[in-house]
Image (cartoon, rainbow, N blue to C red; front, side, top):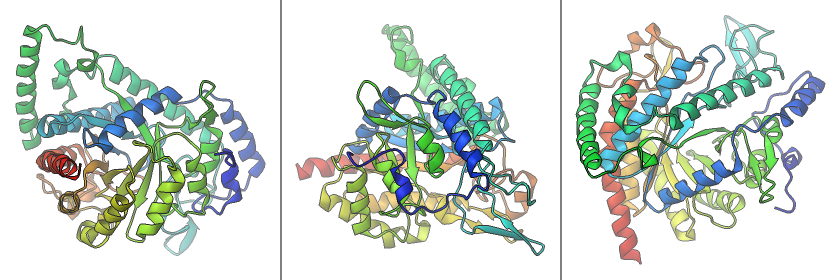
Length: 459
């Protein structure tokens, strides 16, 4: 890293970073943010990396989920709490059913900006710059709202800090205590099949806790029954902000992007000679790489070696996103290339982005069956290649939305308009997300067992 500095990305071509008309204003904002306190700390980042190393070895599973893009308008403690509850519920289902600890990673406290397929948007013959996320410009379709405004970064930082503060209170203050699992239920799903199944799981856990209590094992003596580790993540897209949030750890000399514990490089910005890869190669945070249909095996190997030259476990998470019907076409050759090179990576499945369609009613949506099918196809592919599918990366919300069609409640295209709240891409609601967790838990257990047996045979 001798040739790396936190601003060295500026010497490389970059995509999907907006042009700010007020460049002096942007510099002033970034200078102030550079002096702000870090949002996360180096020790936390190292702890997450150690947990992710267990996922590489097939000893844990990674659950990463949250908003497509956080917004200023939907910022509310209840929304944060409900998303946190939902991820706890899903983790509990996967932990109990698949007999694996789950690393909980939220798309939260910083996931604002999004790359867009087109730089412009046209409505009624009027063309304006696309909405790029609340930390850059406004969603309102007006010329003034769509101008990138550097002062929005102050509000994004403040919202991220407040969100993290609440999450830390929930995760360490007793809310996540397994004895209070009944408090994790979301009100609007209490009369659903998923809630009935979750109640049955609650009863089994209560019996197990009662037995442990009788043996003298309880939350008074075991911190793991009382608290959870909950980590934050977002796409490292807006590099000027990420640069401003990068600090040098005084105890080790390492560089950490303190805007989140984990950041990822998107499918549109993973150019080997691009600024996003250059920035991410110099920070110690665990790094995700989105892997879409255009990614060639040699390019993937070069990306991994550039970002993780020491082949450290827990550093790289490969997030595949092909679409349900394209998994067998693209994923096997990437798995084989990684295995051949002996690279330590986590394979995670993003079953949302490759399955986005436009409904006849005009809304972007995702069919639940396609989301489920992609997860199943990815797991089957890893089993056939003797690899471990170690993660799930999904866009979800704890709110009662109608953005994805299908699921047990059979949301139709006509239902989309009733509660379609997303500022960008459609999200699974709590019913659909919990249903997905139940449906894939057996697959995760089977995949883990298959991977462990394959590793034993290989050794």
